Image (cartoon, rainbow, N blue to C red):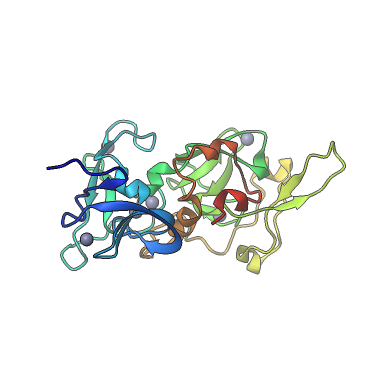
Amino acid sequence: MAPLPRNTLQHFTHPKHSLTLFDSNTKYSCDGCKILGIGKRYHCPECDFDLHEYCGKCPMKLSSFFHPYHSLKLVNRKPQGERRLDRFCNVCCDSIEGLFYRCEVCDFDVHPLCTQLPETLRHALHQVHPLKLLGSTESGTCVICRGACNASSWRYRCIPCGFDIHIDCVTIQCEKRTTTDRGIPTYVPPSGFDGYAYGNPYYPSPLNMHHNYMPQPQHQNHGQVQTHHGGGRIGQVMFGLVKTLGTGVFSNMIFGTDLSSFFAT
Ligand SMILES: [Zn+2]
Ligand SMILES: [Zn+2]
Ligand SMILES: [Zn+2]
Ligand SMILES: [Zn+2]
Ligand SMILES: [Zn+2]
Ligand SMILES: [Zn+2]
């Protein structure tokens, strides 16, 4: 067989035709992982079949900080109706449809795109330390939405300070406060966030951050099993991040600030 041209690939999720890299600012639903996307995708024009650029290229076996002891295997779910159980991503807790990575030994499942979340990031609300993506055994409270971070759920955390932000809250823009203090802008959680509908805006201070003096939130379903399909919570975040994945720009970004230039379409 002749070698495939550049930017073209043959993928096991679509054996009939080869897929060609295609760039468009229209939205699409990835026929691999079923999560929304925008921008570059591998496309079959005959079937209108799309794969995220990452879903088209991600390796069959992956070693990742998400699951350091075993390598993860790329698998494709059977279509709905031919399967008996629901699967959920161990990292973002949204349902898994289509392509995903699995460790059979540990029953650990994760969306391909979730494996591309940055391991550490800087956030405007906690500029003193980097936040690390981890599945903590401690429960906590997300400083953005004030929802619970349940024990064992994955979140961005500063371990020494016990500072938590949900994965899906990390791209929410915070409000800038201009101060006279050396001209360095400070940030507070967004007051317009709908999570505040039930209470007062939360302004972090060193005191209440360290003493866990935070009112308990009303909506506690974060970090538990969700039943969204495709356009679930992580879909929203990934939709924002997917264009930036693999470009190495995360290290320059301060999350919680205006990231529109990074996500510009
Ligand atoms: Zn995908
Ligand atoms: Zn096709
Ligand atoms: Zn996920
Ligand atoms: Zn394992
Ligand atoms: Zn949150
Ligand atoms: Zn810290």
